[in-house]
Image (cartoon, rainbow, N blue to C red; front, side, top):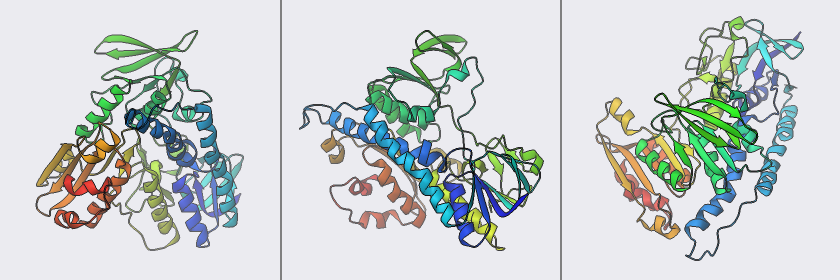
Length: 448
């Protein structure tokens, strides 16, 4: 039986952060992943998705500037886009493995499961470790209706050789909206079927309403308050059965995508054998990211039931914090700064801090600035009809509690709001700042 100071399960950004930091401090470290090293973000999520979005940005702006200096909207070549994307994906695993090798980290390419509190079965080997870190990330939610096996995943979408003529997305979260926008701009007929009254429930709904409008104007069929209850394979494509208040509706599509959420990938680890408590949200951890029931075990990223949002930078933060607590006797409490999150549709929607509902529930004395800004210069010069903001300001301290944007460069502007919240800089001081003009950041003082 092999022995390690630390064994890491999962090679995404959280697991990588833990393994590299611990190895740099002299611990004997090993890591395993049954999939290629790099995790969801680098190989099956954020990065390849953003590469695919690039050509659609050119399409989006050309479409809005048609007749304003642009004579035609470019056609997107899916095969070329995929080839470009794959270059980024293919280079990651060998680069990561080389980094592990340089740091003396032992590498396994097997799934892992617990045999006891400190022992794992990794492929055909039994391994004991003083500390074990779980950073397995998340996976697509398992659907439990007839024909669920016909639904593809976001990974399948990111590896499509050709764009189908029609697609249907099950679920109304950010994955569905982002991929639906990509597919629609590539010429596909797209449907989103969502079981609740409002999609993207964790975002400020006043801003979501603008995205819904833009989504429908793009030609995407957005079907709300409808539960998918079956998928039937046809001679060509699939028929999806939806139920609304006891009545059934049927949709046809060449491809069906399961975008109904991503639970933590922990339920096949035999956690009970290691006395590891968990919930449907992940491993139960304390403020040090340590298992509440097995002090040898730490969890980070999507695998942990922690206050952190399911975002790559948060996984890295938690990974470094967990590593510090594995390495040192002193305990480091995980501290979360404001966590901006973005829906990479076009228009782009971004959010950081409190929503109005959260501010009200928290008992804050606040004021709200909400405005549609499609007549502002930055919207008019790009000819985009979707530009709006909602900011939440603490009346007592005159600091920003939350900011919610939709429109050009929202994914960048939101980072400035994150800094304002973190530093608690008063609104009066923000308004004194000089931003380069004309930029989207120069609009900030008018949003407060």
